[in-house]
Structures are given as structure tokens and as C-alpha cells.
Amino acid sequence: MEADSGIPVPQRYWAIVVIALGITLAVLDGAIANVALPTIARDLHASAASSIWVVNAYQLSVTISLLPLASLGDRIGYRRVYIPGLALFTVASLGCALANSLPELALVRVVQGFGAAGIMSVNTALVRTIYPANMLGRGVAINAMVVAISSAVGPTVASAVLSVASWPWLFAINVPIGVIAVAAALRALPINPGHETPYDYLSAIMNAIVFGLLIFTIDGLGHSEDALWLIAQALGFVVVGYLFVRRQLTRPAPLLPIDLLKIPVFALSIATSVCSFCAQMLAYVSLPFLFQNVFGFNQVQTGLLITPWPFAIIFAAPLAGVLSDRYSAGMLGGLGLLALTIGLVLLATIGAHPSPLAITWRMALCGAGFGIFQSPNNRQMLSSAPRDRSGGASGMLGTARLTGQTVGAALVALIFGVAPERGPSIALAVAAAVAGLASLVSLMRLRTSHSTVSA
Image (cartoon, rainbow, N blue to C red; front, side, top):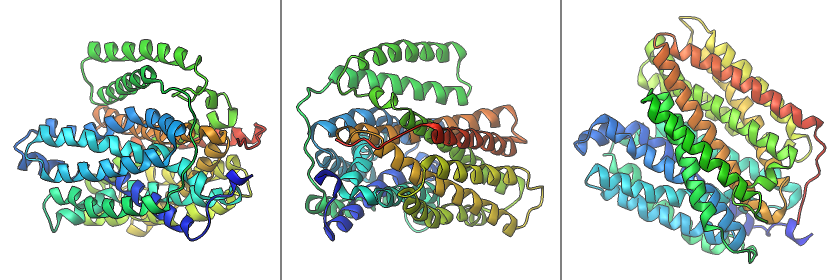
């Protein structure tokens, strides 16, 4: 079919570069702000607790708007969501750099998050329009590799920028890159037809309430907030969530893609993604504490010891992408996540005085395992959806990643609160258990008969 033929070279190369630039900016900006929080709080005369909103405002606006924007992309075309999202992100980055107070910065971060959601909601759907069907795994692999590396190197990039410049430059450097990416996107990104189904604004509002309450409940649990307030939030999530799901069951193209979740292999791929990103975040947050507070390495050494994980992804993800065009995602994902599980177990039980080499190869094993899992998993999620629902599949992919990361971060906070002395080792053990669960869920796909659905 013509729809499966992608776009010609060299436009394809320019298009994937634009996708990579946009997703790098969106994911990296979600990670770098953590490192700068103490500096931002001091410069803007704000408390450490209130400065957390620099991170939370961004994460919240991204999460609540991913699925509504993905649904909008299915309706009006993915290019028409991606390019405005990239432009809004670029303008908001300038606003962040010019902010003079914490409330002002938090407000602009909300706007920046909406722009990032425009990028992340349809980026994999665009990959499906860029690459021919027989090369889809390679395109998804590039996308997955960029997401993984951007998440991993965020703290390192932030530290490097802050060593030579003030915190506003963390946001200002996005502006020229964003301008170039928007100009290139206008020329390179393909136009895909949408559909005439009226947009479901009520579902978009309900979606924002459901995911907002979910994030606040999980975050509050991790930080041991008032029990009654947590129960109220959880009840609100359950009640609105129930009404939201009931509404989606009546829609022909639901904003929450319940129609796609009825496809067994898609549902299993989503579950695998949530568990794997939860395990990854458990490790990412706890490892710096293990290296510095337990093993006695300094901040620079810690950054170097974390580097093998994303570097291994660089090599593993493209290979897995090629293999995913030939072999089952269930098998590749299961084997990759098994390698991640083994690596995490070895890190959790490494002993009190490990050498840098002993840490390095264990980190590389974790990264390689994660890289082998991610590309085939994303490819199967995307290819198992009908072509006219690619936006919904893309939005669920991003939502699964953010949900897993949010739960993982909350679990680390909870573990550190209960067992501060042994927190890092316990968190790594929990991460290994969750990664092992993800491996089993991935292997369940081998028993699910599946044929790629295309419109």
C-alpha cells in the first residue's frame, strides 16, 4: 500500500533528524531542571520545597495533555500538532530563561510542558509515516534511542552547562535549536490526512483530571503526605476515572485508546513499557545515592559511572531495531529485560567496595538490556494499531513511559523514607523485581497471535 511506503530519501533523513531534535529537547528539558533546582531556588529567593514546582509543573502539563494531543493528531494530522508544539516549546524556553520569579518560571514551565506534549504525543506516529513498513523498526529504534539517551544524560548536560553559565542558559540554549528544528520541520515532515470526527473536549478535560489526580496521589504517597488528603485524591481518581472509561467505551475513536487496549499484544506491550520504565527510574534515582553516599565516589566520578548505561543503549537500540523487523518483539523484549534484571541484581549485590570496572560492566549490561527491549516493544505497539489510530498509539507510548517513571520515582522516595540507610540497595532490588516482571509480560506476547493491522 502507498501508505506503507514512507517518504523518499533524502526527505526521510531530514524528517527523522527533525523528530530526533524535537524529542531531545522535550525529554532533556524534563531531566535537566532537577540538577538546577538548588541554584534556581537560591537565585529566585524561593524555598527548596516550592522550587519542586519547576519540575512538577512541566511533568504535569505533559502528562495531562499527551493523549488529548495524540487524539487531535489523528483528527487533523500529526504534522499540525508536532510543529506548533515545537514552536510553543521554543517560545516558552525563552520565557523560562527570562523569568524573574518562581511563580513566573513555574507558569512558563506549564506552557513549555504543553509544547513538549505536542512533540511527544505524535512523534512515533510521524515515524510511521516517514519510514516504509519493512523499515519501521529502524525508525522506531532511532526514536527510542534518542528518548533513552536524552533521559539518561540530562543530569550530565545540566552539570556541564551550570559549570560555565547560570541556570537561565539551560533554557536559552533550546531557542536556536528549536528555531532550526521548526524551519526544517516545515520543509521535511510529511502531511497525513486526518478524519472528520468531532473532537471530544469533555473527554480531554476528564483525561486531564484523571492523570492529574494520579500524579498527585503517587507523588504524595512517595513523600508521605497527609493520609486523608491522599485518600481523597485516590477516590477522586477512581470516580472520575470510572466515568472517563465509561465515556470512552461509547466513542468510535476514543481519546483514551481503549479500542487499542482490546488488542492483546498492544495491551501487553503497554504493560511491559510501564514496568520497564518504572524499573529504569528506580535505578536512575537510587544509583547516584549508592555511588556517592555508600561507595564514596564524588559527583564527577558518579556521572562517569552512570555513563555506560546510556552508551550501551546507543549500540543496542539500533541493532534491536533492525532485528525487530525480523524477530518477535516478545522474544527480544523478554531477553533484553532479562539482561536488565540480571544487571540490576548484580548492582544490588555488588558488595561494599566495588572497583569502577566492576560497576561499569554491570551498568553496561543494564543499558544493553534496556536498549534491546525498547525498540522492538515500541515498534510492536505502533504497528499493532490501525494506521488511522497511530496518534492514539503514539500517545499511549509516551503516557506509559511517563507513568512508569512517575511510579518509579515515587517508589524510591517511599523506600528511602522507610529505610534510609539501605535505601539504594533495596530500590535496586525492587527495580530488578519489576524488570523481571516486565520480562515475563513481554514473553507472554509469544503466545498471542498477532498480525499487523493497517488501514
